Length: 254
Image (cartoon, rainbow, N blue to C red):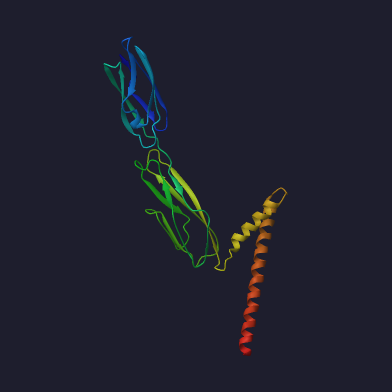
């Protein structure tokens, strides 16, 4: 005689266990087996003996196995007779959040083009549709939500930091979202981003300072960073102007 449990239900990613047993001729060894456990990723550990056998079924359904219903075939044999029984297991779908994959910080100069692809991974892709959206798109930039491709011809924009937020939304129940930010540092075409250097210098002052930070120190550090950056840029511009004037004078003399 084979004794099994009734119908079962389990969520994806959760462990399901139950016991089975069989009795028979005390002079015969009873063996319990599972015909399709290996096919679904389940396991049946069994103990055989004379006239009696027991088993422990265990299964953790993985993503993609739900929703669905599976019939597990359990059998017991004494070498001459085989008795079988089916256990119905309903696997429930567990909704998972899509995950956006975006590039790290990007540095570009005026006149250059920036292109990249926003990717999304969704464990429930067979059941869900995921839509992409963008917020904070700079002037002249474009984003195709169908392909995830971002393009930007960096021209006629102010140098500085541009922060763009991408969002992936699944239409499952419940609906999930994932948002990621891409930062693009744009310089003035000569290899310098004054606003970027301003924040970088201010951050360095704060990190190396041992004094307790307060709003006035933040303002002071920011002004120091801005003044330093502008002073360096001004000196370089004046030096370039002097070189240009010398070249003009030499040309006229010739």
